Length: 335
Image (tube, rainbow, N blue to C red; front, side, top):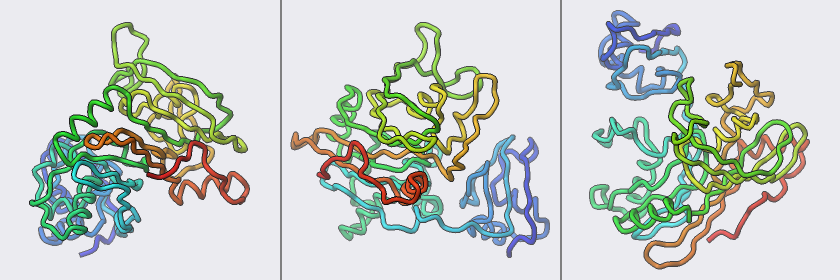
């Protein structure tokens, strides 16, 4: 059954704790449980403005469920082959597309494989790709161990550990700030090279992460920002992380008065007004372009670079007036 109209439901206490399929049945009286599940799996339902394909997902008070007459298209992030840049017994380096969560939420770790395939993460897809490459069942593979992550909308290079030794050693390198991590970000207006230092807290007073001026609070965050290219009305930045706090680059650039193009969270002035995005960027213009570290087993120095994906490259070409994209600053030889 296909919904004959769009419906939006704000979850109240009466519906809190129900499954997404139950909310669909509540909103479309008379349909069967199997029809409600097919509507969710068929890409007709968004939960808090994110497509949700899990009929068993529990909702909570304040959630907003949108039931759409037309199903959403499958994004290329789920269709395209996942480029694996390096794979051995200890680690795997992969190119993450925009639109995928790096890892699964802790509340979803118990999910069976069939349920995971409805809304895969990068971690899931990498493991499935390794299983297919070696033609081995998933249960025979070592689990992928998380040593860092990047935001859902951010594209770029990610490493997973495949052994306990690699997890410990890579974790040490991240903690000691020995891992090379460079991002490309586009901001509006002129921007001068600088190093941004602040102490970040989970709630800066408006429910969002941000910097604090209160002594003794927060974790130190350091971002080294260089100018990669000056464009009409915009600046392409090359940001090297010294520390790796959650949303660090996004927060530092926004608090400098230049939120990343496509930013939808850290795009407010101190008085609460929204900083307009004159470019109308369809997603966050942030890309993890370089990754480098010492191999935990061999001791070899490894370094990878990844060019901007097509959607972000098209934006730069438009700003350049349709000229061929020039070589990106900070590019390095692929390992």
